[in-house]
Image (cartoon, rainbow, N blue to C red; front, side, top):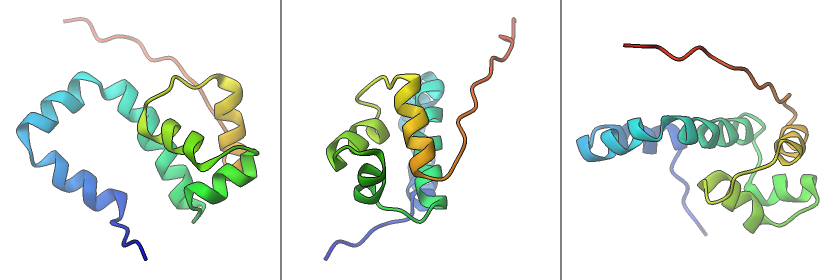
Length: 98
């Protein structure tokens, strides 16, 4: 049987590492999407397998989405949202100029 560590606990530990923090900051936008996917699944109290079944795909596909190894289409994100009982919202933010 697998033991799962809550994602929040993992994030807290990783953020204590300065090297990890620098890499995270450099790719914050990509990680933001990954974190949102994982949060939606956790809020839905679902496993990757359950999300995959609801999406009509495989657990490996969900793992790739949550691992950032693919650039998902809007359609895929909509299917993920529906599977987790959430609504997809996309918005644009102004870029801060220094």
